[in-house]
Image 1 (tube, rainbow, N blue to C red):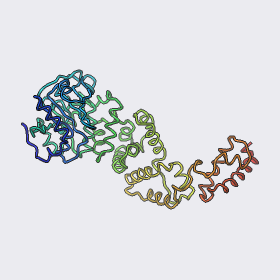
Image 2: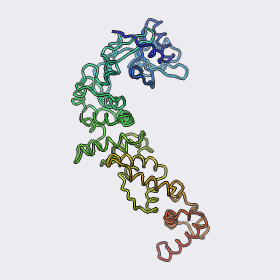
Image 3: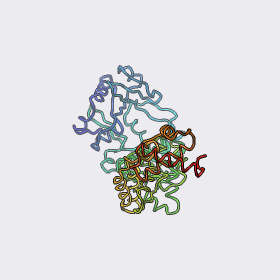
Image 4: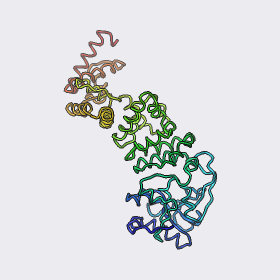
Length: 431
């Protein structure tokens, strides 16, 4: 039965959305706001976007609006452009059989909003609001599930996950982002259908998994994926860690570390993978951009971190040079999360952070490029020919400067270069 929203919900619907619905209603059709935006408004959150559903066919929608992009006519979707904003409008539909755990073989357009809502994934997303009539359709009692903070599949859970196995990962992601529990029948549905995740593209899995890791409570989502046996299809390295020797201990450490690490893709991925083996192939195949892949692999080669309070200033600078200046801040944050997860304290990483500050590590040369001299200057000053010996000289200079940053002056470095060159030629290191 339709239910009247409170006025404050209506007032949060953008004018453009209301205008679209009014045009549809004035032309004998109905226009509804659907999905996550309604869920978010009920929860007093700001929706990221507003999707609409209508009884009008795609062709009729195209005829009613000036600027329309036929983004998905096969599935009844067009995009209406109003000024600089875009709104997806999909004709009410019912889906045919799903033969690949991904896409319906066909769709059938219908005229009843409740029939359209019956094809959706979870009850909390199967709610629609008509801003013109100020009513909403909630055939599966999604409002009650929102109030009770429960995720429940629409209708038969096994059928929903067989239709599109990605819904398993979406279920875990919604639990992580909303802080909701998943009801028992929905969990059972996941247990019997998770093999369908093998048919889902890496790109779709990556998008949902990253959203899960970046959510407010990623531990909730990881818990669902692991305990339902779904994680092995999402991230084999993490799943192998949790099911291997001392798996329970690693599980507790990993989820705590992920929770406490910074909210960015690199940090969360590193936090999840620190104690795993054979992660490089999985990262390479996870369709991340090359920069992010390199950052993740680079940081994983340095972690977990072994820190000693007896490290010399030189050792600290060597460590900083391995981390690289651009990665020091995120490295320290992840290392803190790792230490807290494993020991309950971050005293060692705090020591390292304090020492880096004392050493003014950002002002200290940590690479050959940061020396106040280059190969051409050395060649001119020493009147020598270019060659492989330049690499020896420059690396030795960097080593000397990291021991004593005060030496990073061009005149001093020229004197040192001459000394290094003479010693190397006399010992035949340089021929």
